[in-house]
Length: 272
Image (cartoon, rainbow, N blue to C red):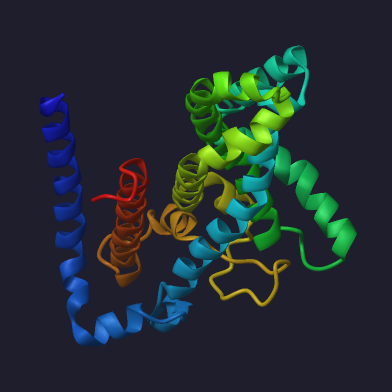
């Protein structure tokens, strides 16, 4: 166990050192000032990545609220609001969703969701912030559902005898006892869902439209940092556009580290 933790720590430290090393040329004040803008026009000397950073945050912050209520509802259905047979089928379906490749969700959304949005709103091509947020919500739903499900499984045995003594039905036991005892699981599901949404590449790449801009509405296109890395990685390795990828990677590394620390804090009951 200690060896695994040590190896993991060494790998994380090596990744951080790699990113910092390649970010050193960007520390020139003029270069850094240009990088920390929303102006991405590489053919005109604009290499700002703030629009992409904002795009990643917007997508994650919109996908998580879409997926979280559904995840809670699915778990409540599995643990008391639905029949045992239907609950087993729903749980198996959620578990199956975790094994579906991300690109499959992307392809289905391109041929089903995007045309529906285009026909419904008559605005743009359909490849937009809204399309990517809906796609990410479906992607992170199984992760959040299984996290809450595991917390429900821990909480239920603790209160089963008490609930039986009080004469509570399964639904009453769930809503009045299990759900209040699962707040930590809800918080962990939110953190994991946010981290999954920030770190995904295929859904933003396929659905967001990839316009390097700050969107004015959910129907406008945007570009996430992960999609930006995928699009720019094949450019000249000596260009500033290429070096901006390492700044994007450092931003994502920092966001992931923050998610990990937050999850550890939640699992520790609010203690470091």
